[in-house]
Image (tube, rainbow, N blue to C red; front, side, top):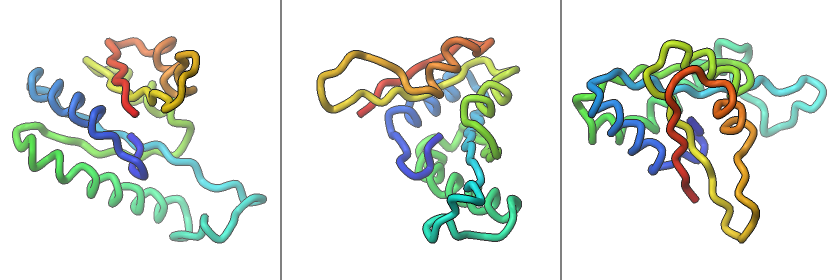
Length: 135
């Protein structure tokens, strides 16, 4: 899940699918520590990985609060993981009944193509997958 630019279409689909299945929804945000050689002023934040993970978890919790209010019967587990998003999603979905990912549709005409995360899970996920298009 992208906490910087959350997508209502993807979140609505995920919450509705969890509600219909009476399943727990696991929302995952994967983050990568900035490279020490290219660390810039915009990358300044809490010292250490634990501080960064806690900060991302607060962002994720805040983004999901509106959806928790809309779907009070859906149990939500928020998770943050350091690493590549595709790897984190595949690991988290190893025992999932459904994996939901977004697919951003470009604003200009172009050949349809998926981003690297969606591409990876399409080819490697071992569970049912829902790819939700959005702008």
